[in-house]
Amino acid sequence: MTLTVLFAASNEDWHKYGRALSDAFTQEGLDAELVTRASPQDVDYIVYAPTSTLQDFSPYKNTKAVLSLWAGVERIVTNDTLTFPLIKMVDPGMTQSMVEWVVGHVMRYHLGMDSHIVNPQREWEWHSNPLAQERRVCILGLGSLGTAVGEQLCRMNFRVSGWSRSAKNLDGIETFHGSDGLRDALATGEILVLLLPDTAETENTLNRETLAQLPKGAYILNPGRGPLIEDAALIEALDSGQVAHATLDVFRTEPLPQDHPFWAHPNVTVTPHIAAATRPVTSAKEIARNIVRGEKGEAFLNLVDRARGY
Ligand code: NDP
Image (cartoon, rainbow, N blue to C red; front, top):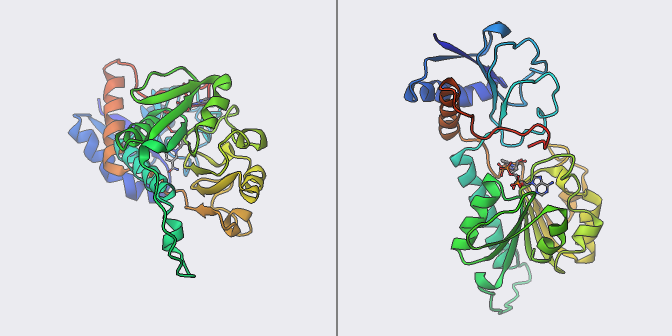
């Protein structure tokens, strides 16, 4: 019987992903129809983004899973009406995009590019840059994105470390875990990359106390989520020189309000949540493959643990 897959996201998302999803269903041999409206009891799967108005999942009595178009699931994970499996987006296209964004900004800091790109005084200040093997980069969050970023930085010879909730063994990456491991991880963060999910536990991971545990003059990249950083504490750390510069892609309120001090701070670069968009073709394939698994009675990939919040 033809499966009904409800597309619950904005019109803009429909134009972006609709065709790619239908094509992926065909390519993966799924007999499934992608629709934007259906009687809840007829819906087998829901492809979801927070741009949707869907809030109440309780009428969807026969639905087998919600497949999120976003990697960050903080806006749906606490929805009590959702009682069936929630799957987060892991998309090779998005992963590549995140690797490129992080590597680009790591290289910018590593090579001190800003002082050459903006040099109104025409200063000829010769210096030799350290090599990658002399530069420590720490990644908070070693999930699908953090691990891919770490592996690429290792291939470029950086000294890479990382921190996660559970213990990890990753080739070439020095790993720390749990609340006890955070201090040691931060001490390795000459360049610190935040790739944690937004949960009750990760909120304000960077605060006055933890920012002080970074090496003096650290650089921060936050492509994770805004609430990972206590904004006022970061501004203080930038003003005191404890943090030399921060590049922030995500914020507590998006778009970042015009009067937010991050816009005006000389040592902050704001990027408008562009580090890693979900890519239509590659993400559609992942969604189709996960539905195929569900129909075969196999376990879904990338299931969200509702208790942990990611
Ligand atoms: P994953 O769920 O795969 O990985 C999350 C990582 O964070 C895991 O290593 C996990 O540890 C660790 N973690 C979670 N909670 C804690 C904690 N309390 N203490 C220590 N470590 C913790 O996520 P992804 O890699 O797919 O994505 C990470 C985040 O990136 C997303 O949640 C999203 O917010 C953001 N993102 C941003 C985008 C952008 O464009 N700016 C695009 C896509 C994602 P463990 O491995 O032990 O479970």
